Amino acid sequence: MQLPLPAAPDYSQALRYLGVPEGDAASRALLECCAAPLWQAASPRGTARAVPTGQLPAELTAGRDIRLHLGDSPQTLLFAATLGPGVDALLRRLAATDVAAAAAADALASALVEQVCDEYETLLRQEWQQNGLYLTGRFSPGYGDYPLAAQPVLCRLLDTHRAIGLSTAPSCMLTPCKSVTALLGIGDTPRRGHRAGCATCALRTTCAYRKRGTFCDAEPTV
Image (cartoon, rainbow, N blue to C red; front, side):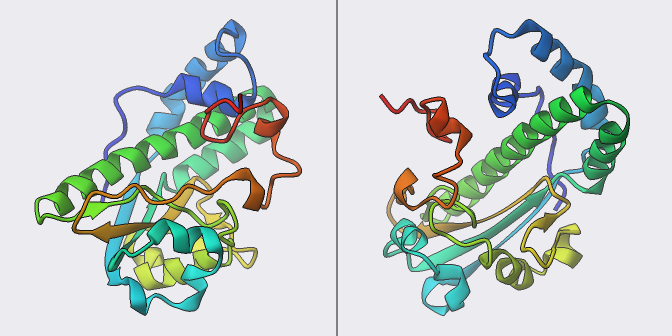
């Protein structure tokens, strides 16, 4: 399904992805210059499907963190969303002509896909609550000890190539690159799920957020 674009960019998150302070006026101005072309290039789409948790392929429950997150959820919602190929094309053009603008647009696109996913998740949450059911938050391959190898399986089950034009490369990365796949638990009581921590994250030794004293969800470590 076609998804709406957010009303305004999340500049704070984009600045965080760039690794610069929120008060950096020059970086903020560069992001603002990139916003209009990015909004014009983006064509967000999403798809979701519920399956019994007990019937999930082994690849989708590999790792302790995803099993803890789903917990005793009797159903699991498979989730995927993308900004579309136009954003990838824009980022390639900028990379060939303006490195600074390319970095800013990439950060803004990363923030945008999260905004799109948040709004799509809210819509799905409202739809399920109408039936007396509740969702956990999203949990994506690559987070904690949940392997990226889950992505091709998730995309196959959702038929994302036909549904929203989303495919996986041999490396298990997504194409278009500004895309997200995830699982959400479904149950008949409100549930939060289980968040992964730094201890099991595959990027813990190179994480730029930890070097700055923060987590990837922007919460301080102290």
